[in-house]
Amino acid sequence: MIQAVANLKVSTPPRVTVPLGGNVTIPCRADSSELVAIYWTRFGDHGSLEIVVSRLLPEGDPRGVGLDSGDFNITAKNSLVINYMRLEYEQPYVCTILDTSVVDDSSTTEVIATDKSLYFCLDWNPTKTVLLVVHESF
Image (cartoon, rainbow, N blue to C red; front, side):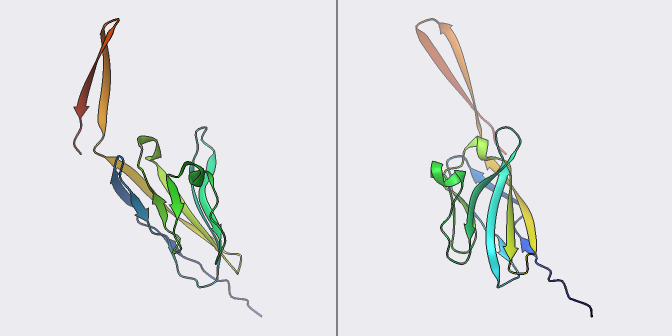
């Protein structure tokens, strides 16, 4: 007897842009109605994978390092929410979903910050500081 293997397909947009200080919601869709868990991950400070937000489905509480800062959240429809875009949040985010057949799949979205500004501090006098702001346009 041949046993069929379920194929789970997860999809996210390949790239999103968001202005610094802005908000963005990144959808994560799966073609299964029997979802068990969702994980949004990124690379941490030392290059290790960290869970930004996760949730056991259908009604588990969100968890993850992103919730502690308040800058990340996860919606009831599995989307990642970045509440306040910072330059250090500019990186790929991976949505991984697990279903009841113990099959998982993932999809990656690259998050790009726009309206970046370069800040240069010129110390021309020990008691005064001049701040020069140069804006880049993308």
